[in-house]
Amino acid sequence: MIPEKFSFRNYQPRALEIVDTTLRDGQQTSLLHDHHKYFFTRTDKEEIVRALIIYGVKFIELFAPIVSPQERDDFAAIRDVRDGLITQKGYTFLLAHVRCHPRDVESAVEAGADGLNFYIGTSEQSRHFNHGKELDEIITNSTKIIEEVRRNYPHLTLRFSGEDAFRTRPEELFHVYDAVAPHVDRFGTPDTVGVAMPPSVAKRVQSLRERYPNVDLEGHFHDDRGFSLYNALEAVRSGMRFMDTTLLGIAERSGITSMTALLFNLYLDREYDKVEGYNLRGSYPINVLAADKLRMLVPSKEPVSLTNRTHTAGVHQNAVLHNSSVYEAHPFDLFGVSESEILLGPLSGWNIVHYFLKEIRYYQIDEATAKEIAKVFKERVYQLSPDISPEQVLINIAEKEFNLAKLELPETARVQIVQRLDSSTRPTSLTAGIQLPKAVDAK
Ligand code: HCA
Image (cartoon, rainbow, N blue to C red; front, side):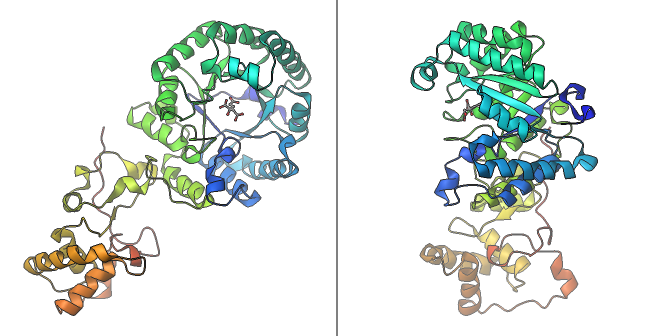
């Protein structure tokens, strides 16, 4: 039993509460299958939960322990991680995602969940082709079990979602929610198949807020049309306080809103109260952690990624060497992307060839020679293979065809110059070497 001081009843929710569902909906991502990993190991889960709590997340959604013996045992291990961080980081609520079914509820209560995220499909598609129950039966079953749980376990925080809410007619959703409202703390309004657009989200949030002023709202937006981030932003702006997100936005099909993308955009929009309490500088590191668990790089479409500070085209490379603000408009440093990357390749120009050979590799080289070498490099670099990097091609040309000699620099002078231009010899420490000039704050 949870001590009363940690009960949800004694918690004052912040302006925006992230409900992280990386280990529930996130585990439903096909990426785990694409990369032949299939599931998160217990260690993965412990590390992810620890990172989320340190980041400032207070609500973490997990599968109902009834899903499998593995999930049940992992729930206990995750609780231990959470308990170990209470003194340092305060209390984090572990929520179990449950059907309106006594066995799901029992398993969650037994596992020591702090809250239950109930769901049942309310759209016509769900009613006819999923569980087969009509609205009245949904209402009778859901209110019975939720009312009972509320009575028997008053310390639990309860949420109810009409699954596929955006394909459920508003009057039908209200019909169900009116009956459940007296017994829950939050209503979810999931866009289960990614059909919502920002205007319909704003309208939906507004109507729910007006009808249920004492019940908080929780959003869950799938990305089938690529709108999950916009929809979440619109919902938060319209007064939704709880938002389901995952690391890197992973979830069933094309996923849901990415946690760091949402916080990044709220910050850029100066919604500072909404990002209060989150360790924004931990954003890129936590994305790297999640990507590592999936055996991939942080995806290039993720706003908080090194790709947004990586430059390949000659014109861009030359410009960011002078001032990165030319092609980097946002304060990525504040979100933990503290490096920039310039990749040598077929699109690089003579400026970067000069810079690389002179400043990174300490060759004695003038601009005219750099231009000559760049011409040869541009022809040669198209024959690249996985065995030879662009850097090596360039060095071979410089040494073997142009006989460039190296400058003798004292060690102390060298350390300060390197940036991650030469991917084959990256500094071992991420902070080694100078960075490109930082982006100017866009605000
Ligand atoms: C699911 C569907 C769900 C549930 C969301 C919720 C959705 O995977 O069970 O419980 O609010 O998108 O509707 O993720």
